Image 1: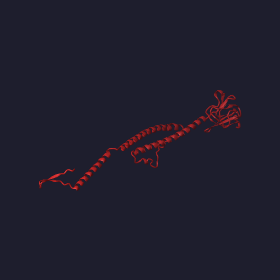
Image 2: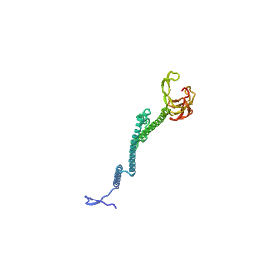
Image 3: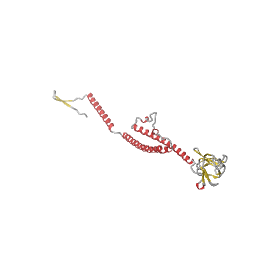
Image 4: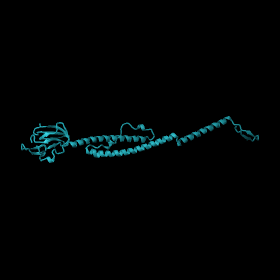
Length: 277
């Protein structure tokens, strides 16, 4: 029940009842409600600025965790770049130098990507710069690894060719020293034993007992094993590749056939005195 209020009327010297108008009551009620609503809005606004909701706290934790993961990823990339740079340095300064091929310039190894902005899709997000920069470094690292991988493939081919080259070169004496009687004639000018004319001798003559084993001086393929060449008698030609061919002449007999592949040190024939010997 609402309280009844009175006021003292000095003219009548009596208390009179205060009459409250309906409009005034409504006015005060509306003003109170508006003030309450405004205060509530201000409180909610301030609270929203300083107090996070559970979902916002979860998103903040996820964002913090993502930043940590990107930081760890960048550290790992730094380690990967350091290891790659060590391989690149050895590639240029040792491997490519040994095989006499040009080093790969750093500009080619660390070349970026021209044209359109490859990282535009990362714009507009929180930490978009961090995400874009990390992806850019990943792309450069991936490309550098591809360049180095191709370089190592090239070096592997060169190494294989080098190995073939080294084993193909006629590098050993075809007759063992213990079987060798003497070196009859060397490479260069000499007096022909038959014509007595000074002329160039395109080989080396070894004197050894008949039947002494003759060995291939390098890897190759037997180009011919016959006695059809004038003056050589029974002879063997081995094509070693790389522009090298060796000839073994005046044999007693063969131990190989045409198109047979031989290795350095393989027995190919025996010393004889056929042809112009």
